[in-house]
Length: 491
Image (cartoon, rainbow, N blue to C red; front, top):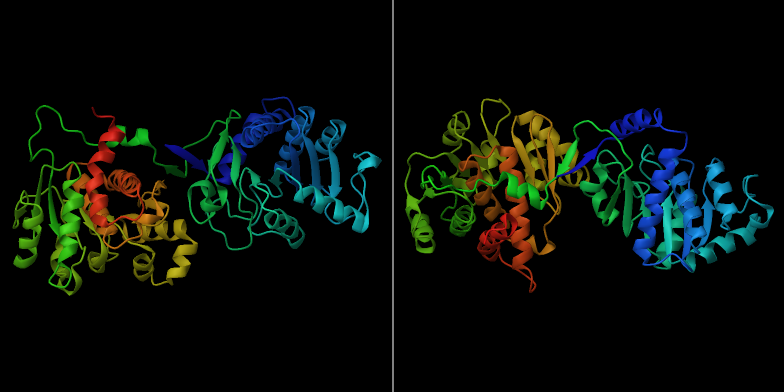
């Protein structure tokens, strides 16, 4: 997994390491990694036109020292100072290597800069605008990880010049203006083509909407010793570690039996689609419980299912139930020892009594908003916050669907899955996911692991299904087995 830590965790680890290293070592490690990453991003250093946007924090210092390295490799480097408290030693190093320094407001530069770089008034402003317009890359070192969300007007004006001239922006640690610890973007912020971070990922790299502003994220190891991560992201290797692969002594019962309550006279297709998702998972058997006419449709598509109640290892409830939801029966199952997945209409049976065992819920933003009594747009803007809030309030694991899926457990653990394609925003895709995650629950995975593996396989299947363009939910279900085989590296 990729692990992301909070600002406080990173700062504590940095302080501990700096106490054991010569002064400036940590910044030089970061700057060297940043310079290499920028060179790789451009494909060259010599002759490259690089503009640094430098604020008052350590990220500005990292940018200045990286600029020094690039200048010594033949790049044309210009630093635009957005604060009169910019890193003076970094400014001196850059100018000594031949770089130029301009203040964004046209005032004089710090005394550490040689007089040849000092420009005043409108002439200075025109010069830095010209530098950005002609740059190959702009480096965002405006705000450090401790900065508040949003950009000051003078910083926003400089960033806008880069946007207007289609100059790619490389962010130092994170795009300036995003909320590092929540992934929220409540105000104007940088939208980076590429982000270079140090020591560990930050939460904003993994959680939308900030993650969408980061672009690809490159991690530079600077030697931090870190505690357990606040948020983790699922990777291919995690599927191999977690997936319940059957062994030689397995039978259909030991592989897991899933009970599925889905579909109704109004939405019979939901049962067929959820069944398709479930059968693409690891279970050995599926029992469908629902109206006879829906059971007939499910059997026609999947003759291997068993219609009617019986012993199961987990339940998946809710897809397409509509008004046929039996709240009392579902709440009785929630208080049993059997794991339960609630999706769509099944979420209406959830209460905050905490009288349930292992429960996974799979809402989209609108459904989570209804559970918490807030507006949908609020959930969409603060996805991590509200997924955690619902997990704690209802004592369940919450899988909040979206471009980046968040899986939050009631004990505070959070995972994300970000391999989905926009084509996955199609009717019935959530029914496939519910069936697949239910299958993983029945095979013995915890709600957190079932949600994590299910979301990742769902995204991987959609990637395969969308190779030629638009997809349908049934096409996604049809690709789950192939995605699983590829991820498990099965011959």
